[in-house]
Length: 454
Ligand code: PHE
Image (cartoon, rainbow, N blue to C red; front, side):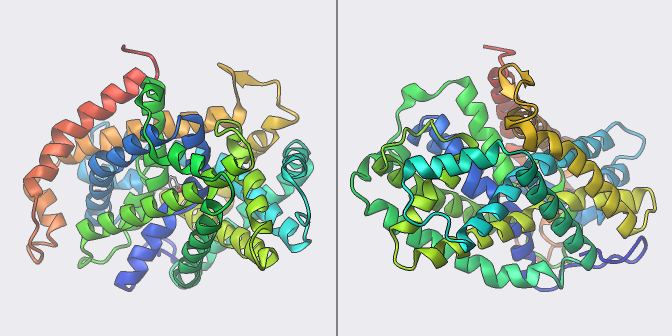
C-alpha cells in the first residue's frame, strides 16, 4: 500500500496479498451483519436469487471496470478520472466516491463499535444463561445508551486510522490473511449448529425457497444496494486498491475470486442466522440492524466451548470490519495525499475526525436523535440508504459507462490482458455488458426503486 507521502508509490507485493486485500475490503460487516437483516426484511429466498444474479451480471463487471481504471492510472479515485479524462466532468465520479466514503465510514463505524462492545461482553461472559428476551434487552439497552456505543465507535475509527498510518501492506493484511480462514471455519461451525437446532428447517426454507410475491421495486433496489455494498464497488475503493496492484495481476480472475468468496461468506452468515432465528421463534423481519447481536449469542450458548466461540467470532468480525473500513478511509486519504499534497498523517487525521463527526449522529440515531427522521427512516437508516441504494448504484453506473463508452476498447483490452501477456476470453461479452446491459439495468432498477418510474 501507499505508505509513503506523495511521490513514490508503494504497492501490494504477492498475488495472495492482492486477493487478501481486495477480499479484505469486500468481506466485512456487509456480509455478516448487513446481509442477514436485509434478507430478513426483503422476504428471503427470492431476494437471495436476485442478489446473486446482480453480483454475477452487474457486480463483477463493475468491479472489473474499477480495476481497469485504478491499475491503469495508479491514482486515487478522483485523480484516476482526471488522468483519463482531463477537462471533462468525469472526475465528479471520484468526488461522489469520496462523499460516499464519508457516509459509509460514519455508519459502518457505528456497527463496528457494536462489534467491539460484543467482544467485551463475550470476554466478561455476559451472555451466560441468558435467553432470547434477556439478550434482546442487553442489545437494546446498549443501543440506546448513547455514550457507550460512541466510545466504541471512536475506538474503531482510531484503530482504522492507526492501521492506515502504519501502512497496510505489512500491517493488517499480513494478519488478515491468516485470520480470515478462521472466520470462515467459525461461520461453518455456527451454520452447522444453527441448522441442527429444533425447528430450524423453516429458516432454511425462508432463505432458500423463493417466494416471488415478496419482490417489488424496492426489494430489487435493496438487492442491488446490498450487492454493491458487499462487493465494495461503486465508490472507488477498488479503484484505489487496484492502483496499488502490480502490472502482472490477473484482474479478471481476481474480480471473480473476490466476488465468489464474498458471496460464500454472506450465504454462510445467512445459514448461521435464519435457522437459529426461527428456532428461537423470532420473525425474520424483526431484527433490523441489531439482528446478529441478538441471535448469535443464543447460538453460542448451545455450542461446546461457546465462551471461546463467541469471543473469537466477535474479534474476527471486528477484524473483518477493520480490513473493510481501511479500504473506505484509504479512498479519502489517497485523494488528500495525491491531490492536495498533504502528508499521509495529516490526511488521515482530517478524514478520521470528519468521519467521527458524522458518525456521532449515526450512533445516536436510536437515542439523542431518535426523533430525527427522513421519510420515516432515522439518521442511521437514511445514511445507509443514501450510500448503498443511491450513491453506489449511481457510481457503478457512471463507472461502467466510463469504461464502456469513454475509454477506447483497445485500451481496456490492453489493461485486462496485461498488455497481451494474458489471453482473455469473453472480452466482447464483457464489453457488451458494461456498454448496454449494466447501464440500462442499473438505471431501471434505480429509477424504479426510488419510485421515479413505474
Ligand atoms: N464491502 C464492505 C463490507 O461488506 C463494505 C464496503 C463498502 C467497503 C464500500 C468498501 C466500500 O463490509
